[in-house]
Length: 250
Image (tube, rainbow, N blue to C red):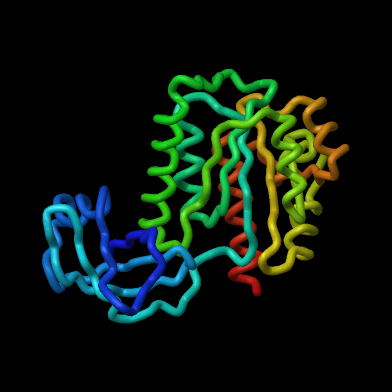
């Protein structure tokens, strides 16, 4: 069944009203009819099976039939900070990272970022990113849509890092030197509900200066195995490792 995120809190007094792009998707794309079932997810991350009661020209009204009990979110909040890469690699990170459970995406301008953020196109670009993560959250049956921020400076990223319980920076020189323990150490120590920020460089990686600044702010550097991963692959590796350790092994 198709999944839709509802902006309004659930009320037992009346039906759930769906409008806008989701109304168009239900009626024009999925061609659903009255009595068809869908999943609905509310702002408090509760979700349910709902039956379509009425369809009008601008809205769909549904009624909750059965509440879901299984939680689909990672037990910790994981933020992925990516140095701006070329092409559509960032969109791939957003889409697949959402499927793997990321809570937040923070693009940043790294020293080796070739792509420069165009403020004139900022609103359109951010809207597209938010649509990508919303659709990926629906497809993967999540209970929350990750947040996506406009690109920040490296200095701003370090300031944001203070909000997290654990901070890691993936550094290929650590992989080359055989570092294996820091990611595992964090995943062994982290408690449910805590936040982890993981920073990844663009093509070409982070500079030594950037890594040193991260260390000064309390980041742990970590290797991701003996192979050097692409900028769009490394975040997915980390999210997969977190899911394995915290969901399958606990």
